[in-house]
Amino acid sequence: MTTTTRSHPTSEGVVVSRVAPTEEGNTWTPTDQLIGMWVAWTVFALALIYVAVMALGFIAAGGLDAPLRDPAFAIMELLILVQAPLIVLLFGAVHRYAAPRSRSLSLAAFALVVVMAGMTLSVHFVLLTVGRQVPSVLLPGFDRLFSFNWPSVAYALDILAWDYCFGLALLLAAPVFTGGPAERAVRTGLMLAGVLCLVGLLGVVTANMQIRNVGIVGYGGVFPVVTLLLARLFARPREVGRKTAPK
Image (tube, rainbow, N blue to C red; front, side, top):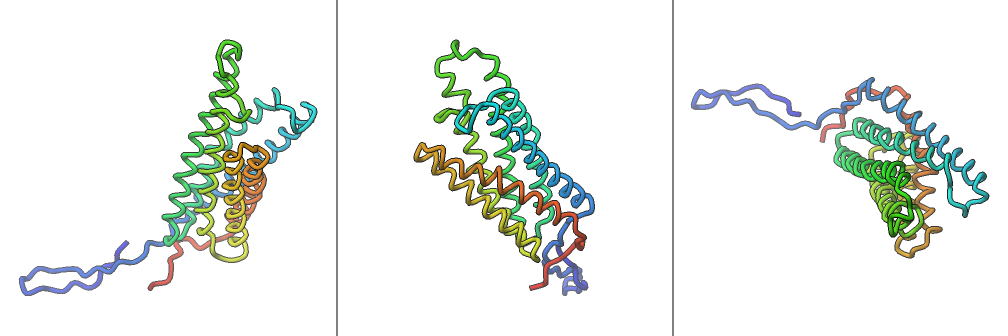
């Protein structure tokens, strides 16, 4: 965005306008506020439902070490298919909320979340369709392709999506929130969730899925709390068109 100063004639008779660059103001609008608030609440509610279904699934299976079975497993897969696009929308709202100085980071975070959503949607859609309709006895190496028993292709792609791409997105989004106590709480939550997601990658390197569960705590435990904080933050009145101080 530029501002135009008074025009001055030149010796050739051509009028030249002197322009000085200024930093673009914040574009946060009431519509952005409404979208951000309700999407954050929805993602938080879906996370609670996901945890409840998972807990009931493990109880029905007989313990944490037992594989989850239908209908719990199918419901959890469907919840992810609903939740992933909403997370993209939430990070779009975060990008709109960001001040000009941090929009490069918020845009990078949004791009990584889009990659994450594309990967995890593909994985879980394939598991819900092809993985459930192809008899495992007819496809050699079925578990290495369509299961969450490590190592498997589906599991590796989902870890890449949530632990790596989403973990980086959380860390990149954290600097957006540098205001008062409410924003600082969001920033701290984003950083904690992001670090835990990336630490979960050590489980892949060491082939120890117990370590990988640290990543699950990041995006499945801490991030839902962050969405609750975001919902409360977005619900607060905020000056529209806030500009940074001139340098």
